[in-house]
Amino acid sequence: MIRYTVTPADPAAHLFAVALRVPRPDPDGQAFRLPAWIRGSYLVRDFAKHVIEVRAESAGRPVAFERVDKNTLRCAPCAGALTLEYTVYAYDESVRKAYLDNRRGFFNGSSLYYAAVGCDGPIEVELRRAEGPGVTGWRAYTAMRPQQVDADGFGIYRCEDYEEALDHPVELGDHARVDFNVDGIPHAYVFAGRCDLDRERLAHDTQRICHAQRELFGQEPKLDRYLFLTRIVASGYGGLEHRASTALMCSRNDLPRPGVAMLAREYRAFLGLVSHEYFHLWNVKRITPDRFAASNLAAEAYTSDLWHYEGVTSYYDDLMLLRAGIIDASAYLDLIAETATRLSRTPGRRVQSLADASFDAWTKYYQPDENSSNATVSYYVKGALVALCIDLFLRRHGGTTLDEVMRELWRRYGRAGAGVPERGLERIAAELSQRPLAAELDRWIRSTEELPLAELLAEFGIDARPRAALGDADPGGRVSGKPQGATLGLKLKGGDTTVASVLAGGAAQRAGVSGGDVLVALDGLRVGNAQWPLRLAALKPGQSCELQYFRGDELLRATLTADPLPLDAWTVTLADAPGAEALARRKAWLGA
Image: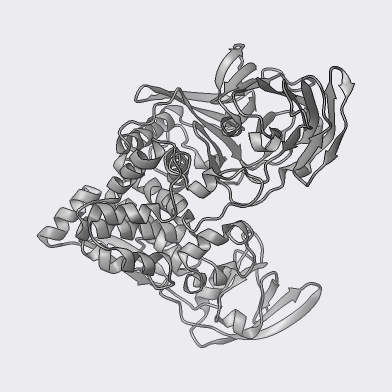
């Protein structure tokens, strides 16, 4: 059996030591290949760039090897077992790579495990303790199946194959843990980082969310355990799904505080992240595109259906908060309004279709620039709204629901371990509804036409309409007050006066202001990040103003003519007196 032995060899230098033993290497010379990307994150990350000090040996003697390409090396033929030893630099705090210091360790297998090419079958992973100052009390946390481990989780684990080994991240350290049970399955949070949280509330809320999702899929699949490996930072947000765990990153203020009963916006957002990553247990990890399933991770794998896997998941992550009783129907409609507002503030929706956004993820979504909002659309944001449109359309005209479509995807592909062909969700939706959906789906997915949100929601007794924003901080949803001021068509980076982006056709772009410019003064008065919204609120549409800014080390001036506030913020509310049929549809969908 192939075995990986992972040692946090030098935490202060951020170095993992890995030994990969292959009992029966290829007699013509064993090849090893490290992944170029990690499943669930669609960018070539070239993990091999962090590998240093590679050597190979057999029977105590060095074995020569050659580099084949940036990810692959090949050893010379040898008679007995072959061991590849190497060191990996790990200092990336994201959920996608590996990290090690004197406080904690974390890694995804794609950062540390070379694949022994051509060697299939079960794999053992041995986790060894860290040595050195500051690493006492460490435990190992992973959803891998233990084979021979001690009370702290160190020892030998078993995986059925290389893909499974890649799909079980590992967290190391002296961390807080919150255990709870969901439908008889042990679940736990592991918190890496300082925190003061209401553990009972978090466990209770998460339990309800997970139960609602498991109910959707008929309490399948059965799991031995599930872990939420959560990194707590001063400012951060994100997650990456795995088959029996997820790696999360959140801000310290995102967690529920002891003694605070209200549902804070930050905590609601964190629960939305938890719901999103847990829903991936089905939609991505098991209901997965065949083009991804067939990939060996050596190069990009393209699909036009990422909107299905991420957008549909984004639709359900908020909906599950409603079904779990975390929020009520009005709060849920506010979340729809916020999503619609984000789409409305993306001029790129008129340029890039949802299918193209999915296909182009490798070069565009994960590598945004100052013009991205003008040229691209998010398959998360628009994908969630398209999923909403599909669900409402099926409920109104198709005699079925998106729930039924997802359950059929599970029965046909997820449960069977088969990859989903391109447009698989679309085909099943048409099959279950027994009506042609091609025209609607082509408009929503493969064109840049606006989505019929207001029209579809109206058929469910819901009022949806765009309005002028109250300011840059207005995310959409129900508000009080009246909009004031005008817009100059630019957005600033958080915390300073650097221009993050300019709106296509807006006042700033017309005057030649660009992303990366640093604002200095407006009409002779110094501009600060805190004062900027106040200055905009004092402007009137059509008013001319002089903007001073630095581009590089040159001070430039431009005269801008302020534009009226756009109707780009949405409000979505329950209609006061819907018709009987609309009310019945609304109750079937929202329970309200």
